[in-house]
Figure 1 (spheres, rainbow, N blue to C red):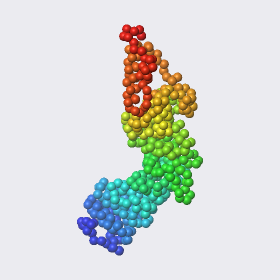
Figure 2: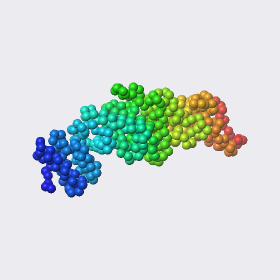
Figure 3: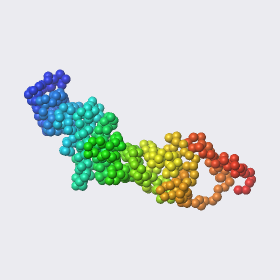
Figure 4: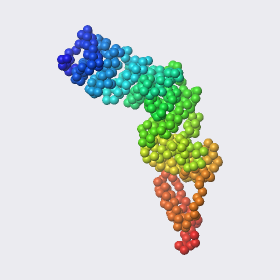
Length: 469
């Protein structure tokens, strides 16, 4: 094969000559795929020429056929030479922009959906492809929404739903690539987010009906969650035959989506190593917080019941059992998971109505103090009282609870050790005095030092060294 000239100086073809040249290039590329008879530079030159021909759709028909797309895709994804892969992807991008039939980006064929979604997903990185134009002028959002709706429809039939249980099935991989594409578009182009609102109920339908895999955040579950994070969950689709209410809380069971997300969270923090939680599980927690923020009161109450410590857990210090709430409390102070730590504490604070006293009541001052101090949130002095806890966590009823540990006072272990000596009592009094003075100096709590108060009221007596104990 004779060396070809650089594409920038290539003489333009037109009419029949152009069609023959494009056909000839594809014939050479197809033979190369079968026999590997071209050198890397020869392949690149042919693809560069094809890119020039593909800038105008006239007389470039072979580019837009299934055979042409498949040849370019193989070079784009299977070739180890980055220059070759890049040129092939550019040819594919031009084809998607120019040919009307390729603007219907995603069709009923999952192989095509997987292929084209992967191409567009990769082009969201380090590419000058105008996705704003693709979405607004070339119906890309409509195509993505239609593809997700088709997947959701398949989940209506149990026999077809089974094909998604395998993370490596073509159905699952095609859905995952489409969701990844949606996430990147809505992340890089926030103004386009409303154009994907109609997919919210379909994504939740797939998420709830998909059996929680093992591990829980295997595809497509992780991509379903990520896709929802960028969308306005409170929006409703105003188009005909759409959901007229918030799709996150369906009329048939307003709590089902929130409950399923919490089930995923429960399994995920049990399965993944602590070192992986920040990366793997944080998106689930973020989505749960967003759902709670817009939830109706009945759903909020249900989410509080699932996520906050129950009365039964107060027979021990909070965080000592193996319930979901206890594991969340331990994560709220974990040095290994800085993102999860802040996310969990914020969620528990929000579940407490963003009320500092109620927050301490729900989780104990031991778990609440760090969050309150780091966010400079003042706490009323009454929050440190041994409040009573009754059914439903109502204050002022039932059995008194230790405000530090959250444990019922009647369930605390009785100290069976010998009584404190006078010196031990003095040291303890001094330690408490210093601790309360430090706490008062932070400004977080307006608390009176009980030792200083005892001295002022004459209840503190200085004993002589030779006094009896």
